[in-house]
Image 1 (cartoon, one colour):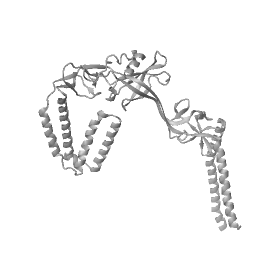
Image 2 (image 1 turned 180 degrees about the vertical axis):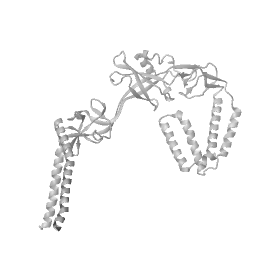
Image 3 (image 1 turned 135 degrees about the vertical axis):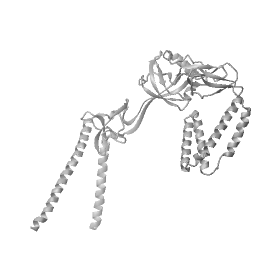
Image 4 (image 1 turned 30 degrees about the vertical axis):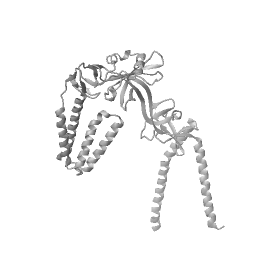
Length: 444
């Protein structure tokens, strides 16, 4: 075997030995500690219950004959002494009126779209972007079941499509379509009959087109006197008492945008306290609102508590029912999840955890924003002295003193490195200075 081959074999053998030793040391070090990776986490407590809407409501009545055409959608704002419904002789008369309104609206959209002031100043790319944006808004509103708000967005979408056809020269104008629509309107107007009478609201508020018999019985004033048995009875009916039309009670006015909800929850929920802000979601719609817990008091059975919440949001979906299945979300926090058994205190009495930083132990502080029996959430921050996502938190394998000693040793080694590098720099500078003076002495 020649010398070159022997040297190559020795080199690879040395590398193999180093790798083996390094891996064994790493395994020994890793086995010394049991760790868990810190992750971003959201913690929220969810409580489900059957809730009863409580509002100050006044019933609207009409004893005459005819068919009603309401002027507002449910949840719409009504001014004092304003019309809530027009009375017509038949459904056909209302249909004719609605069709005339729809055709006139289409005429308006087409005339606006072909207006020179609109089309001449519009770029193709710009209008295409608006169409895409408006389409996404409509899809989102449909997914969220916000149908009452879609009519205006739909008109805007159609208007943009019409403008785009003019801009890209697909249509020169919409005159023929407009003339045809105007002819249809003229024919319908010849058959149109005026309303017989009108129904007015003496009070301002928010209109609802149904009644359920609980108007005047469930009020903001008497909500504190509603018993657990009454709540159970109402929720058991599950909106079965709601009546729309076919009686002299044609709807109601909710006097103000503030309403409350009452329900029964399990008495074991100790975190439910008065004054806490919560999020409410409903099974009947995708509506999400913010509310405040007014009171929590024990029911007579000892197993439940009566909860009362207040809210100041009024929408179409929120007035469609008397009873709803409610998801109440509280204590919604986001932060870095840290196991409770990993919490330690360092020599400065700072609260935190020990982590593995490569093969060194380091101490990271925690800023607690939420805690339970299993873990805490530390506030997310850019401060490197605090725990952050993906840090390897030490759970087991060493006592506190060992961890503290290892962390302090790591800190000392880091603090010594700059000093050593400074001394090395000074030594190199001295050697450089000496080398510069030597040529001068040899010249002499």
